[in-house]
Length: 194
Length: 194
Image 1 (cartoon, rainbow over the protein chains, first blue to last red):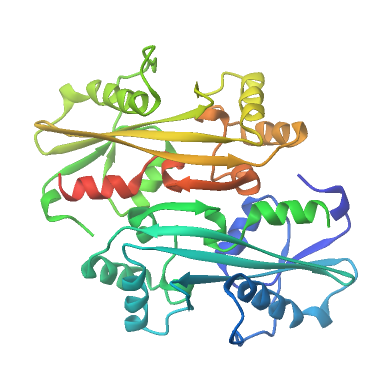
Image 2: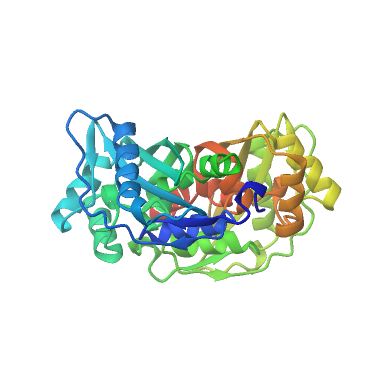
């Protein structure tokens, strides 16, 4: 389904995440993947969780804005995992991943994805939050996952759509696709009226 | 990860659903798809929702039981969609699908998957329930989905992993994979101790 307001517009997704690409495709949108020059994902102290995700999505957009053409609409996103007021980023190594998954085991954490949709003369930012409850995992199960799935490109050291998500996530409250990296239901609404 | 208690056992999945096959594969299990002679999915009057899903899963198992060998473990499942005390089955035609999706639009319904795991001398049944909230959908959006995705093999006339799920499901409460057709996190636990 193509929205009338998007005729003659080119949608750009500035993300290297294969999961975001997959979600936006399955949601029925036609778009081009672009690179932003944005690298550093540092969150200023004092910024709260939902704001942090939006802040990072906007930073990514800002890094591309000078290249944006009049007929283009840019989508950027950032997903953060929050466990007991700690923001978990991507793990640096095995020990880091193990520590993160151990801290998520048997508990509920939240996943927030911030999104920025932007054209030359319009910008909308929003975020969505999903609660995720993990069953208790043994050290052996955590080890098995890290060795076999190498979750080093994933905030919080896990992918909900992988072995660990299928077998150990007991329940979620909110959007599943938001945990995967893109709250598509909100993007659909915002693009419909952009 | 292979459980010690399953060494020398053959896991059978009696389901024609490509989604169940995919979920059990991604959960890391090795298994064989088998056919049951079970056809009629009639739910006796007065049986309540969660019981109905388990009842149907057990009926499917019963239809295979005479073929089950000593080293085999059979998994059967049935997923039902409940909207305001009505159980929605698979739609018979376009009008039926349209009516179902119209009744789900803007509301929360529940999805229950009943599972039976059985060997020659052991049987365990359980179910899982997930609440699913749809945003309001226009007639045009419902029509677009039915024409393009033909959800005639799906209870409630939708697949959560398809276009309609990505763009219109606002939130769920419970297991996402249970809505897709298999509460894998529960199967994992039960197989571990079977």
